[in-house]
Length: 391
Image (cartoon, rainbow, N blue to C red; front, top):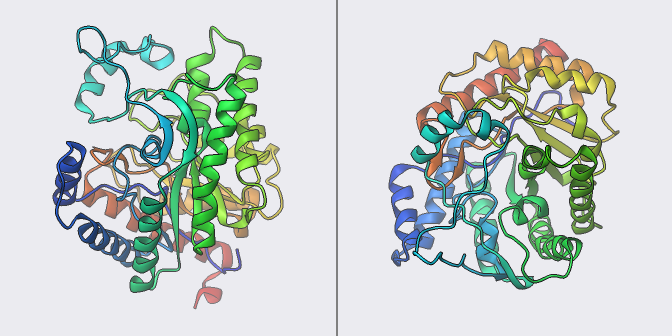
């Protein structure tokens, strides 16, 4: 990494301030918001500056420019997708059958989900996929680039979606095979990846649905069925990344992000081989989540390839308890002792907001968590490099 300290970043999506979220809600309802582009630009500049003031090195735009959730925003930037057809009664389509956690803890989820403000709906693919969102993408790039320059940030990154997650909620009604569908999506998403890199920013590819799909498939499907499904999507992502600089691309997974039991999550050790097939320079993986914190041990048995970096989550986005900096430091040192101090970056488990109107913690607590992450990284760096090297 070329630094004598642990750098800090996060997964990307940040809680939208209430006044800005109100404007996003107006736009989501179909109303035109006068001066929105200028308001968005100012909001991004403000949130970038706040990240820098908190001590974050590699900052994002908070995903403020996305009108839907982290995986479905791309529907607004692609051809080939249609509004979901209404049912005969005009009601929304019926929910999918419960599985895994959702079946075992149906009473809990019956209380939790109605309180959330998800926007996700199954937009089917009904025509050829191509990238049409150039204007929105260039706007997001310009806003972040301007914010990074104004705040004198170390670097900036934009979170984007992986083919597996971009198609997870959109059934294929057009392409002859699943493979054709996934590769068409990958080719379209390549436009986003390449354009962001060409602008001098870093890319983070979000793919929560890759591990999450295990719960949806197994059982009744077998492990072999799941790995066939997943390997096709890993291969398609590598196809999208061909010729791009892997050192400026990181890949993020989590296990669905919500604050729930997660007893049916697929273990990291079962899917780590899939992750290592990707032509990326870094991995952002949940590690503060108490269901997955123990999985740092996976890296004692699995060698991190040369030149790659781990960005473990060392603060959680799921709880309003702010992690103590000494705990953050302990987590970072634990990883550094396994993969090497030069191969660790401090990060969060997931985004603090899964969409414009879904937040996991209060906004003020989010900033306190990021400040604790920064202080913990400083303490870990002192231990790993020694105090004199940090002067």
